[in-house]
Image (cartoon, rainbow, N blue to C red; front, side, top):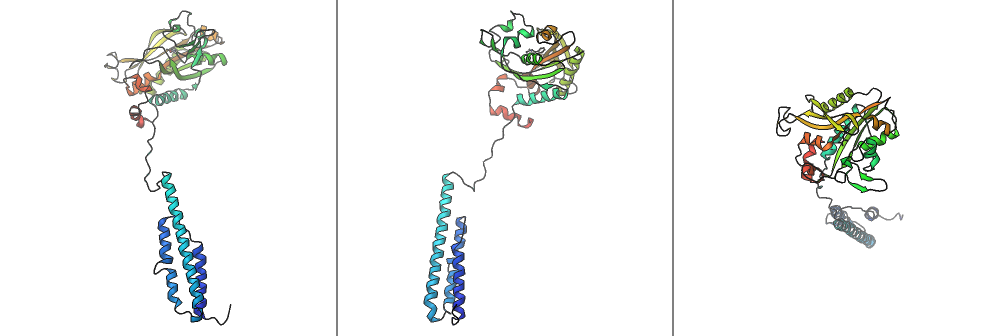
Length: 353
Ligand code: PHE
């Protein structure tokens, strides 16, 4: 650099060069930041305006050069800041068009609820899982053998009537919607040898007129236990434990003789009415008892039909409706509510998670 040049000139040139570099790489991500930069560099008291003050001390012969450089710097800063302003405005505009307003408070997302039938089903399965039952699954579209014939239904049994069962095809093999999940038990027995200890949850279909008390589909959980020396006392004990865990430790059970083609002996089980505690109320029709399930010892003919030796093994089975158990817990008066998907009804179960 030329040694005769005096101090103020050099200082100015250095300062201007430094500012040039800084200004060329200015960045801003919002309109506020752009405005701050404008004030810092271009306002009356900004860094570039202040250079004009020092300009007075520059020797006359260098004034022209320095003046030009300052003007260059000013143009550079003005252009750079205008460029940044355009960029942030374009980005704001794009966000607005995309519907993104980052300053808006978030819209609360309504949380869903678990369906009451699923809540109760999960609770029921959990109780049986703790007693050693595993879950078995099977098709809803079934054939006559797995739903009826293997389960000892007589050829002229009324359940086989069109009035009770939805048939999909009559010939060559009957195809129908299962009327109970006992068909899953048939399938399990065909595939496995005892010990078998399963619960079969699932949807079943019956040809009923839809009303507050009946529907053309509902949900069941059926249970099956087959092993050596399984007795009716085992069945009773498992059902008692289930009833007490589901409805409270004070719950009593009673078994009444009944009939099912696939069990012998067969029974229906009542629990002490959990609404009046057994004293008698409108819900239990003043009897103090409400029916919750069917059960019995698996008929030896069923074991044989499924390839299990009935001389060596015995077993019990039971089946119940999830809707019925849910009604007893939550007193849902109209069965149709379960399948109407009315969120006002479903929201009532938010706390029941
Ligand atoms: N499958 C019977 C029904 O759907 C219930 C049941 C299951 C009864 C097992 C006895 C034993 O009604």
